[in-house]
Amino acid sequence: MRVGEEVYRLAGDIFPIARSITGKGVLKTFEVLNAFLKNNNCPEFEIHDIASGTQVFDWNVPKEWEINEAYIENEKGEKIISFADHPLHVVGYSTPVDRWVDLEELKQYIYVQEDVPYAIPYVTSYYKERYGFCMSMQMRDSLPEGKYHMYIDSRLFDGKLTYGDLVIPGSTEKEVLFSSYVCHPHMANNEASGPALICELIKYVCAMKNRKYTYRFVLVPETIGSIVYLSRNLDHLKKNVKAGFVISCVGDNDDYSIVESKYADTYADMVLSNVLDYLPHYTRYSFLKRGSDERQYNAPGIDMPVVGFSRTKYVTYKYYHTSKDDMSYISPEGFDGSYEVVTKVIDLIENNGHYRLTCLCEPQLGKRGLYPTISKRGSYDAVQSLRDFIAYADGKHDLIEMSGIIGIPAYDLIPIKNKLM
Image (cartoon, rainbow, N blue to C red; front, top):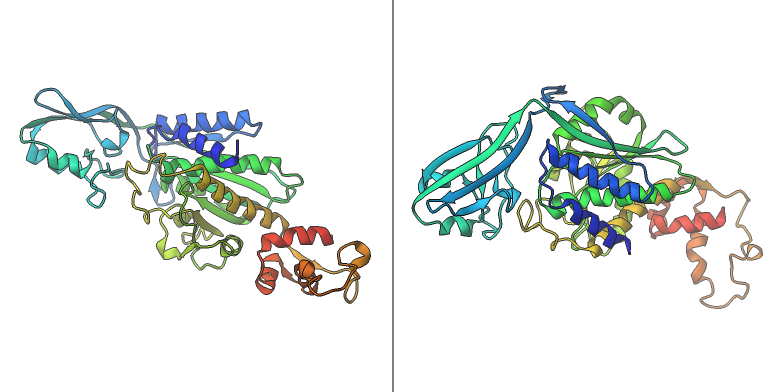
């Protein structure tokens, strides 16, 4: 099975889980992910629980949300929509309700996505108590006059918020951070793709020999989870993280994207940009277009070297935050592409450095089997990149800087460096 197919299958395993920023769905997601890691002889995520009400910087951990049943039914007792049919039918964190209303009042509690009228939108109300339902605009507009029963069996209570992290040590304490989120229900690209790819990256890192850097993988509920994580680990992260990447929306087969750090000047910006620069096409977004947890990692006083990586960036694709962001929107091919980009990033970070020739003047490559022994037109073309590398191997430039001078991907300089070493 190729990598993309394996990631797609894992994404499919966690896709239908009814997640929110708290609750059983998050725990179930970690059970599935840890089972995958265990089956592949990798370490598992360590699970942490933070009590509701705990202050984390300027925020407080919210109450835990539990939902058992929810539906709208007509006067005949026919269910129009239900939570059991699709978790997006209920506004996230809805409080309980058991009321009969007429159609006009019912529509006050129904949310639709007008630009995708055939899809169910994803709507939440985490920090203000309310209830509501979601359906396609087509369905809402087709409802006949009459009485409707709104029913939600849910509760908000002092419980916990759950997140997970996993650290794979290297020969140094300096770290590479990968972060994604586990809070969106029943969405493939804007949820399941990130954690699924993260698990495949864990496999990749575990298989690496002689790791230079320590690798930290973090899965949190978006926004509040990263705030919690930073509140508990900030000093260590600021001291040790060399580069960090928020992984989101990486399963589609369209664009590639980088969301830059606040000033687009970190090591993470440089590494990911160099890999993406040699793709046929990608889109660069400034930090002003941020939206995922790169916000928190770049917040004032946090200021970590973290960028966002996506295929088609959240918000910019048509089915974002709707029921149409399903398993048909992502593909094994999409995951193959994302995996290739991020593993190149890892390899480049591991191999990057300043290299200097140990002999004076131009070395004789022929006696080392690195140069054609017959001199004729075109015989030097195959070794031009090697010769260019040698010309700039003066200890003044790392591989990324040399890439800009020579005009080939820094990743492609790695085998040249290894050969010369």
